[in-house]
Amino acid sequence: MNSVYSASGAVVNSQRQRGVILLAFFIVLFLAAAGAIITVLDNNTVNQRRNVNTANAMREAKEALIAYAVLYSENYSVAGAGPGYLPCPDSNGNGLENAPCGVNSLGRLPTRITLPSGSNFPISTYNSDVEEQFWYSVSDAFRRNPIGALNSAALSTVTLDTQSRIAAVIIAPGPALVGQARPSNVAARYLEANNSAAPNFVSNDPLDPTQFNDRVLPITIDEIMTPITRKVADLIQVQLDAFHLLPPVGYPLTQLDFDAMLLLAPMPAWFNANGWPLITNYTRVSNDQATLTFTGCANISYQLFYAVADSPANIRRVGSQC
Image (cartoon, rainbow, N blue to C red; front, side, top):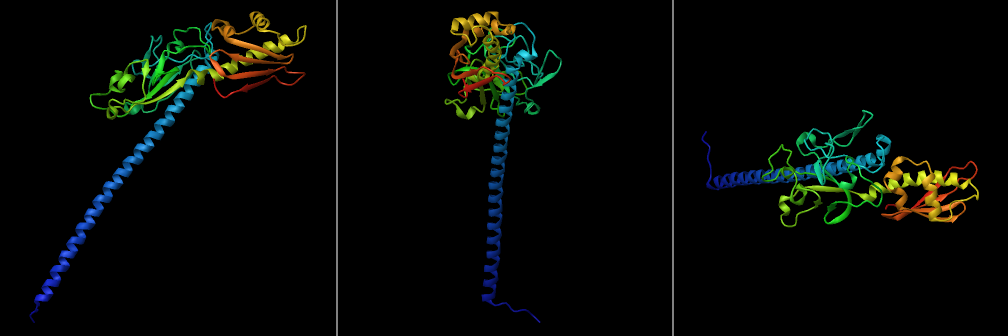
């Protein structure tokens, strides 16, 4: 039996076919758009995760460097090697510092420091496997080799966005930009604008923002000297309590008396070598209480209380940071 198609049926089938084709087209278009959006979102998520990971790694490296500086006198027995010094940069890319380092020294951040004891002090290995490991510059006054007199009144040769009192900077380079052929030991292959040469670093380049992807984290003099002044205050507290036992009983009356006490006190060699007596300011409050401040660290003071009987020495810090 032959099938019979009406004209109206043919029109209906044709419209259905066009509808199906149009629906399929929109489905394909929707899937393509959704794929593009998902790709963008994925890329944004990856970039955000990368930024967070980099920021965390930079903070950890900064904390390691500050700890290294604060513990320097415990790890190095060189005369005058007091707390505060920072390692030299790695200039050849082998993960180790290259000492002695010159003025306005710039290089990669060492992955670790080999201490005189032979043990390793870890700093950071972040991104060393993708040729984007951190770079690092240290102010001349804080170079561990050569060692100069260092205390809270230290001045910095390093700046960040024209701001001074910077002991060091850590720089995370971004992916290679135009002309940055890698791997290399040349700073300009990783860092942009002023950052490719110390000592005046920047956190952005307003003249060419699309060709700048460095992230810069400073280590300030105040961040290093705040815990170090506490170490110094602890040493002085011991001497003040010993002096308190001498007749007439009590803390020194004046700054001159305090200075005379320090001259005779059995302090570590670095205390005098680094000029701490010259920048330590003493005020007697009572027989059993005194206040210490340090030049260059104007925002904090230490209240010292005599340790009566068997009670421990009491030091109270006023202010959060130099």
